[in-house]
Length: 376
Image (cartoon, rainbow, N blue to C red; front, side, top):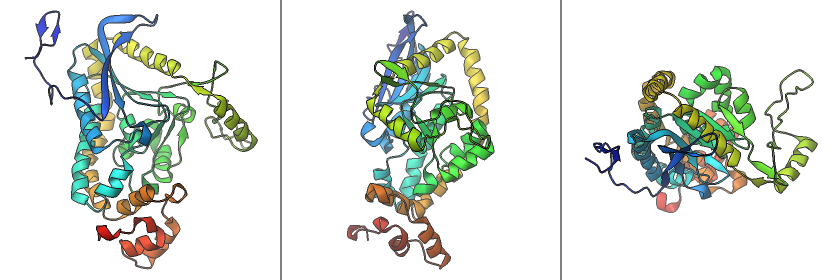
């Protein structure tokens, strides 16, 4: 038994790792906040924070393991109403796995990467099976694996400066850690296939417009007043052919003016936090078991694909670390910023000529991926 009590009742300890101290992520209980700003006594939300802002909150192997423990811990807390899944800083919620780790440790090691993907899959499953509603507070970019773990949540409230998208086919992977399963459920096949292959990013306003997220909040202040994200079109206008521009990136003179506004703005997450707290309070004002069962039924639309595909996807991702994963992650990690993409056209030409995967192929289209002497 534990010394955790509710009205004198002692609960059994259901923790996977009792007493574990988180080092890669943050876990904290915050009181539920009522609409008038007061704290609701005895009830809390579990805030789980990715804590790697220097690398855009990419998750390391250890962080992924800690996420499993954190979501299980929140599930077991009787006084917890919701989980808020977010990240430290104002640039990114998460940009996926740690590319330095992928490049320098996992590339060329398919069996070990497969073991890593067991942790990742367990993390996504822990989110999808959490006994509490999970709200994704998106404080910046939600890209690649970050998009996948974000879509495993039940609700998403985003800063209006956030961006959403995939990166896999551009950098040596496929978005099969959840996006090929979840994204069609949210936005339909046409938008999903576009995002998963072409890897163009969506603004928060566009993501809201197509049904990917539940809400956006302004987070930029100019002269003490909140302003909408100046980089995106936020009016319901069309181009000369009637195609909607809502949420599109600004271009030309409008982009130049937007950059001036952005440079003068300061970041303030108070309205984002208020929206998150409001969502959590609305969920607190429901029957807990009925809400949990409702979520379990709704999550089946994601789980039916996730459970069917995750093991075969894990196997493929491991093997991919011998070919395009090795090439793509090394190039992204080792090359100067302007050269982080493989020369895709040269790669396709070389493969059409019969060049095998390995250093000979890398020499032609991704020279930064060639084995270093100590790697031979």
